[in-house]
Length: 225
Length: 225
DNA sequence: CGACCATTTGATATGGATCAAGCGATGTGG
DNA sequence: CCACATCGCTTGATCCATATCAAATGGTCG
Image (cartoon, chains in turn purple, brown, yellow, cyan):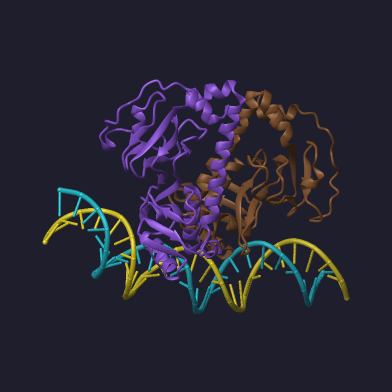
């Protein structure tokens, strides 16, 4: 039985209606049992860093960012999570990041205790948990390699990554703002914007609108920028 | 039974004498079964990236670096591994990095197939594997946060990390060269050197020798540099 | 239409890279 | 035992990619 099958097999216990008001309280206060996919509105926090990690999550629709804010206010986005992606599966007792919906999204919240109990008896579930964490690790390793490259290389790699992950071969609809992209790539919005303009001028990409990118020359994108 | 106890319980099958000649062939060609700690000389490769990941490793003594070399020759050191640390435990079929001894070291090589078989029957071993990967993930996340900071902050954080990990409260003996540090922090040797000199001039650290650092003001080091 | 927000574009500043030279240990051969 | 080569590290001078500051543009919603 795969992880996802296992998760699906858990009978929804309760479904909470989407009636919290903006940032008033944390999403995770409300989602105690595992339930049906829950709507989260744009920019609403799903959990905060250092909160106890009682759940892990799967994106059903929309997009989620996990991030950390440094003391001086700088924000580093750790990852973007798209439909099908799990997030919040750190092994420790508390979350190491915060998570917010980028657009109105639906996420499935799963009680850690339930998964852990399942893993106890089902080796396959335990292995899936490990594999998922390993995939996350690989992504972080790739991110480290990104951060030592030039602005052009980072933006190009980001576009390729997004194209890859959304499945669309050479057209991407970005759910996130320039600020989100900048905070993910360790750049400023101005540099991201300028780099995109440069790529467009070089006919490597096209920008029908600011959130829509057409990859016109994957080859050039791959070989740096 | 803990992971380490489990690993200890595996009877050494063969011990290979340390008789390979420098880079002539990969260390991992020689270490087929799990055996007693094996000596690896300074700068000798333990495994290369994209080699099949047949083993995972534990540092017994010395220090190991895992790294990746980009097409243009830049090298990014992903992690330093000190005695007691495991490395090479990616979940995929092949290693995603290369590993080399920084100083003459001893490493324990463990067959993945043996560990996997063990994990199959022993939930505790499976859980340990997961926890270790989770710890690695956290370290990578911390590394990403490092790479968006200033040179001074990176160097300060590096010194604190090393002090933390070696256990010595305020004196560190660095096993690695300035180039290693630079490639870990995403800086140049010149910048690392200058930053250390600045910290010394500010009486935040002392440098009895280039490889030995005394932390004189942890507080200042924590609050940036 | 007008306010607002995200994005782009322009001008300037700067942190760290690069290029280049000097210095201090360690080791080797005469 | 000392000249000398080597290697890792430090220091200095200059350059450049990206940040920063500032303003213009454009799209969206009341």
